[in-house]
Length: 160
Image (cartoon, rainbow, N blue to C red; front, side):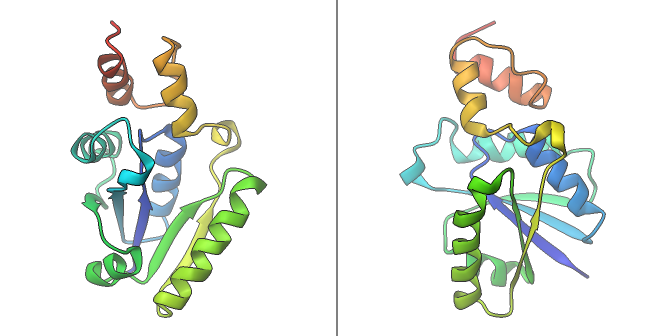
């Protein structure tokens, strides 16, 4: 069984993230979406909210599980019995950071491979940061996120 870990903050999950998860589902038997507890990033949504939104956005995918994690990614991957880390690349600007992470993960867990996917072209400009900013200013985000995420963001920013 081929198991892949897709780690991220997912603050919140976007249609770009979901696109990668759906496509990974055709390549791997099991996808574990690993929602990172990272207080250094100061997320808008707490860990359980982010996990629940990922569960809702991926509920149509039978081979996806969602879990939070707070330890070293290399250790988490081993604990899960996985051999692959999935990362997304939206633009060239993502490459240097992702390359550095992949190289470090290779040093920490040489048995684990990193695989990179790019989202569909019409989703490549979407980021959680942009979604939070648009939502905070009352903008329309329904085109970019699952309806559950849209509702959660409206509630977070006290909008109807």
